[in-house]
Image (cartoon, rainbow, N blue to C red):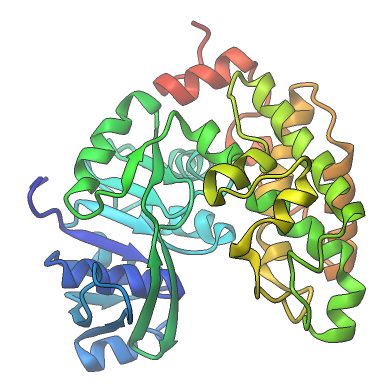
Length: 373
């Protein structure tokens, strides 16, 4: 890999993928773009790239980011690239892993942006299941680096860029390799401890599915015409969130991973303090004006339950950590959307963790081997 100018493949041409591909291209990197369907690629080919808008952001160059290859063929997209940036909803990670498995080569790096909950573990497990023997380094970001939208065909807008995003490799002792490779394009990426910590610090799992599930009647009655956080989270709702959060923290404790409580996360992320979770949420000016989804058929349930709550519950219960509140939210959310979200979720079996002890999981994450130390 050329450390000065790695070649990127962006997998996913949605809101995040188009923004990332355009931004990387405008930074001077060669970029290939992959998408499952042709529809979003046609305007990119017609323009020769993606027009990037970023009003008010001096640090983001605007203009047409030239895309070298825009294709529905994963092999063509990955050919000759050094870093593959996966920018799709978490429920599509498995599909992307299957598509990439035959085409990955030694030395390539795959980064999930973000991994959500245990995304890197699932991705690596699927590569193994599909016979990928290449020395490929899989990593995950704790959150997505941009707030962005695909504003129209062949055009994207970046609203903000995060100052710091933890990234962890699987195994964790190779994290610095990933950071060094990414830093020429993204100095905002910093080393995360390991993929257990980046996954368990996914606080969207706390704020998204539970609040939407409890507010289902209000969402359907008003089509989301209320402030999601400031009106949708009353003291009673916050008490349920605290129960869900306590279960998440206990799973981290069982694995030897210290994770921030949701209340402490609000303080560190937004300087929003409070004597309890409800007060901290109400004191967060960043939540002002954020409206609720217009329907329960939303990623807050369709993605965050199977790719967030399910893996936490599945792993927690395997380790003897009781998670009754999380499991209750999964059941209610499944009923709301008429889907068995457990059946489609990331269970320990799908993560390749079934039957492993805590020590074996720790060794897998730290060193890449599940054997006992």
